[in-house]
Length: 191
Image (cartoon, rainbow, N blue to C red; front, side):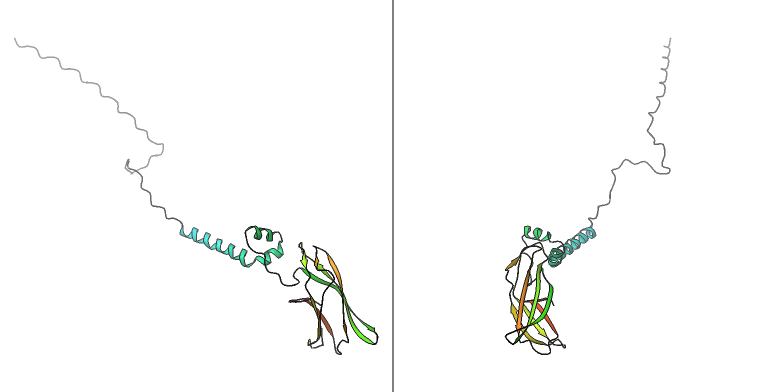
């Protein structure tokens, strides 16, 4: 007798496929690829560095060439320049000094006529300033110099805000004199 055929084994039940995570919003019509992202190489900002260089050069130029104006506007900036090793700006004779209350008058002594000038020199800075020699120039109506003389005040230097008086006289002033200018030797300051 023939042997009975073994009963077929039952077919295994199909396994459910694992669920894939799908984002809430699906991209349509795009295949999913699992490749590394390609990025465009970044260009380093040439314009940014160029602008920074120009601005830096501009600041250095202003600080270098505008030093006198900056220090005169804000005197403590002079200390910053000194700390950075910059020499102080050169001063003209009389910088920081003002001539005030100048009063011309005439006098006569022993038959000689004199032009007398009285006035005040004031230190308008926050530094000690040496008082240079001063010059007086007598001019006619056409602004032509007729006579000139030099003189000094009795004080060598003025403290910040301090002032001193001066008195000078010229024997036998020229006829036709219409104006007198007083200058610190090297730069004109006032009348």
